[in-house]
Each structure stands twice: as C-alpha cells, then as structure tokens.
Image 1 (cartoon, rainbow, N blue to C red):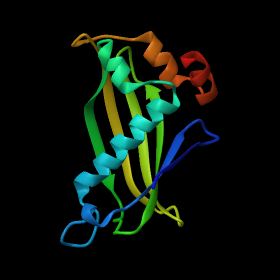
Image 2 (image 1 turned 60 degrees about the horizontal axis):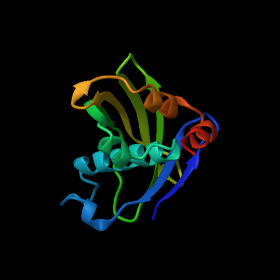
Image 3 (image 1 turned 90 degrees about the vertical axis):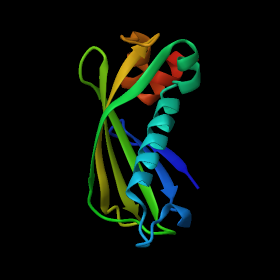
Image 4 (image 1 turned 180 degrees about the horizontal axis):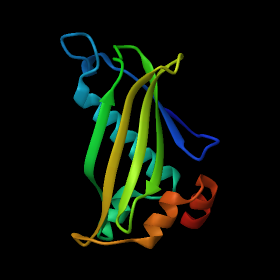
Amino acid sequence: MTTAEVTQQGGYELTLAVRDYECDLQGIVNNSVYQNYLEHARHEFLKSRGIDFAECHARGIDLVVARIRIDYKQALVSGDRCVVRTRVERQDRVKFLFQQEIFSLPDRRLVVRARVTTVCRIDGRLGVSEELAERLLAAPADAAASAG
C-alpha cells in the first residue's frame, strides 16, 4: 500500500506499509530495506515533478547517487506504516541534495534521517540538464505544467 501527497512546504510524502519479509531475525526492518524505501520515494518524487526516470535515461540523462548518509533513530516492524518525506535542493552545478526522513505512523516518530547527494550525468559524463534542474526544483504544480 502506498499513498503520496505534496506537503505545504513543497516537499513530497509517500506512505508505505512494512512487509514481513523486509524484517530480519530480530523482527525489525533490515537496515538495507530503508534504502529501498528512500529510493522508491525519490523515484515517486521525480514522477510528481513530471520527470520520467526511464525516459531521461533513454535520452542519456541520469541522476545517480554519489553519497548517502543515513542516521537510524528507531526501528520499524512488520505491519507498521510509515511515511517518507522528500525535499530537494541544488548543491552546485551538477549536484542535488535530497533530504529524506522516514516517520512511523500514526505517531510520526522519526525512524530514519538521510542526506542523499546525487549528480547529473549526461551521456556518461558529469553534466547539467537545466530542464531536469528546473523540474526538480519547481513547485509540483509548475513541474506538472512544464511536463505537459
């Protein structure tokens, strides 16, 4: 089950449910699974901005992870629900910083805080796609209008 919404602050939130096979022997979500949650939320965030990841790749434009820092605060268990909040800012010409947090539901207790640095590659080389940058940084309504 996933649901998504745009927050008033211009961020993006995606709600997920923990599946039992995502848990380790301790009965908690395995640390690597949180990276899957974060990546899925980033891809959905891109879609909300009118960016089709596969279409960009076909055009030779890729947004790839260069660095990820994850702080684990609490654990989720099977059956829990959580929300992944995603915001983005431009760091420099080719880098974008995704600030992401995972909160448990319904109490919105902080579970994970992540800083994901991505770079833009064009035809395999570091580059800049101003079209991609504009859509990433635009308000969701503006991004949808420019995609259409």
